[in-house]
Image (cartoon, rainbow, N blue to C red):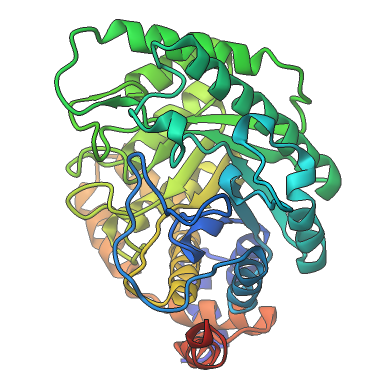
Amino acid sequence: MSYNDAKKKYAKIGIDTEKAIAELGKIAISLHCWQGDDVGGFETTGGASGGIATTGNYPGKARTPQELMDDLAFALSLIPGRHRVNLHACYGIHEGKVTDRDCLTPANFEPWVKWAKKTGVKLDFNPTFFSHPKAADGLTLSSPDPKVRAFWVKHGIQCLKIAEYFAKELKSPCAINFWMPDGYKDEPSDRLGPRQRMADSLDKIFKAKYDKKAVVPTLESKLFGIGVESYTVGSHEFVMGYAMTRKILALLDMGHFHLTESVADKISSFLMTFGKVAFHISRPVRWDSDHVIRQNDDLRAAAQEIVKMGPKNFIVALDYFDASINRVAAWVLGMRNMQKELLKAMLVPWKDLTKLQDAGDFTAQLVLQEEYKNYPADEVWAEFCRRCGVTAGEDWFTAVRKYEKDVLLKR
């Protein structure tokens, strides 16, 4: 079937494929830098720690800022559309002595801004509350030690300044996501105190002066993490309550809930509460294991909610890190899978299906929901890729294999 045939088939159910292609091209997804080097960053050679673990030892990971930038640029060249890149604070670039996190400034990220301008991407940001001596006991903003809390509060404030710098230099609002791995391995005697301390620390951070139109703070919850299996300070309920009362955005991560929960089902409630939804796309297997996202039911349901409620109301970023496979391929496959599911969701007549739902005609709704799954979305995807100047099928992997041979395996 050709694209024109697919266009006609979709037109019969009221879907304009040209509009879908145009809308997909407007969606900028934030690509996470940390897939490229296993969440290592450029401060030490010790790797990730403090509730973060990357499994695998596939050859070719980025070891320097330039290698990471090159890998990101290559990955983006195989992905249709214009997107964003999401940085963590531990990816600051240091000349000589490493600047500690409480003293980071925009100067540590000037090379990233130059690269972003050259590459044509915008930047998002994250403070890094892990992989640091002052996070070794699993507590940062909730620590009972006031000196430790003060260090991490200053880190958060400095990161707001860096996010503002990104926004102004690149002329695009910068989302800055706060996730703290604070918690306890075993049952705590006091659950309230750590949360009160974390709330107080966050208040100190967000009271700092920053341009609220340029910087969009988000706060991310989690069910549990490695080493903090029994109690997580920044639980879903804590984050929801804090974000609502302080008028910032709560962030949903698909890997941060119980495996039997539908994260997609939470989206509509978040939109009603906050007016905008910050969303990390991940894939847990047994736990928050950050596998590369696949075109599975969870991803499909999330994409459908994004489309039905309006992509403009979402801040979407990918968040996974797999060191068992080619890291560049992981970026490209994950991003393209996200885009494919968004496109498929755009090619469904949701208004017609909603009418059937409201009329109680659940038989017709079920039949059409299933039949529409077999409509020729692949032809529309191929046309979208053609217009963006990238290959639609698996041929992109040939380019990755060549890059692996010519670049990655020589590291």
